[in-house]
Length: 266
Image (cartoon, rainbow, N blue to C red; front, top):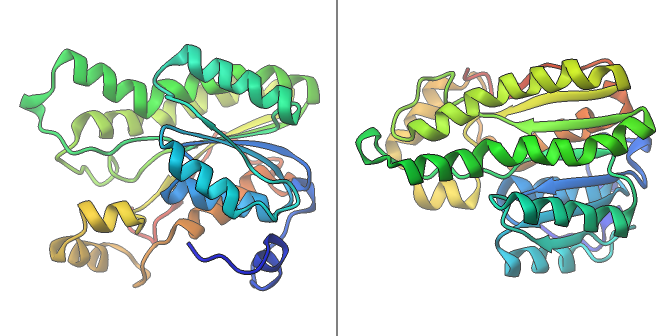
């Protein structure tokens, strides 16, 4: 991840939008230490938001917070195993105590570990549910009172085009990512009365370091070239910029939607 001189320069030297409504707004990002999540943290910090983020990778999380220490508000990193609901709820309470009411939640954390149908056990099935969707519900539950009190808020749940493409090789993950759409729509209906917006941000195959290291091969490159309408690599920043829009007041009448950022693949 590139690191220009300071956070203001990171924003000023790009051609992309800035959002006055995000300045000083408290934003919570799950799974924020690396990959797409780290790009979310960097982009919201550059907007002047009060950013908190969770991750199980403490060393990467602390390094990212230090790297962005010159932002208007240095991001607050809290190590947290999101599959432990009690720990998740406590960490969210700690964020509120430190930064004030949470106005934006980005439910980013997930694990696309490959697995075969016959190898799934009850334990691994439950673990897949816990890391890929259960925390999204409980995080939303934990922040909704802040948003209700403010009569404003944005919850952004991360989905995936994997189930749309009928991808094989990780059935529990694909099932969870399809279920995110239902979670978003249910929450949007119940919380919309309080002007809380809930949307699904749906990535295509984003070229993070992890994806390149573990999964991308020549066959994958061919699939991307054949599937996407835009012949370019999808980058974490492409997702982060859509998340900024969904979090800002500019999108005040957008809710219960699936915003697909995939270069036209799905």
